Image (cartoon, rainbow, N blue to C red; front, side, top):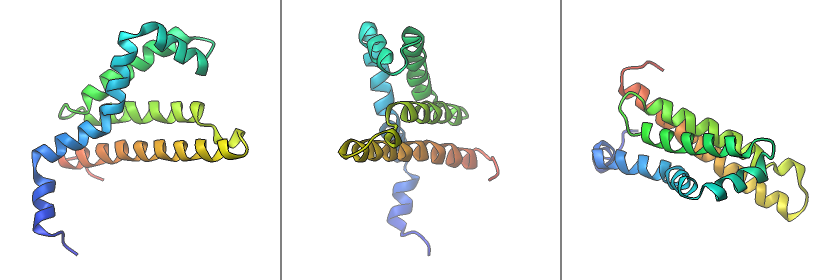
Length: 139
């Protein structure tokens, strides 16, 4: 089945591609900026997840969130930004939403968060694939 002309027109609009990228990276860019402007808070947050090296984890988180978000908008480099943010999200999700270790209602809450983050990873993978195809890479 072919797509309706209206959908093709919307999908072809450069503004739609920009909006989709903005929606995908907004949580990461905002989080990176908040952490950058509140270093003690960023370190405290990291200490709650990775107590062994909180300053290093906070610094790497800021770099990945801000650089990855920026790369998503650069033609030819969006795959790298999407990959950085997908790997970051995967690791953070495994650490922060380990629902398999929990029981009762909290298990369901963390499983839902885990699956929501998995869908974000899927969005980044899809972005990398679509951009690769548009830039001449073969699937």
